[in-house]
Length: 86
Image 1: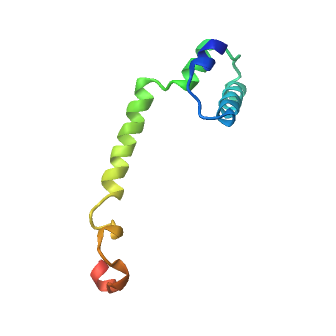
Image 2: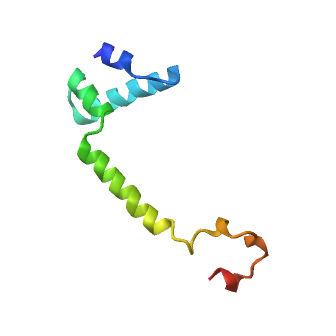
């Protein structure tokens, strides 16, 4: 388990501490012991979770990134009238 954690790239010591805290907290919530399989399952999302997250991002992008809703694409939105923004 330690070699698996040691092989993961990290940016700082705080990230290592945060990962360890996340693993311990998740094990306590689920009332399971911290094993190598548990750590791997927590740190590597399975395909169904990744696919679900991608589908949610796509749905959010199509809803929130509508051309009419993006104000910052207009050259000078501060000088427009409220009626023009509708």
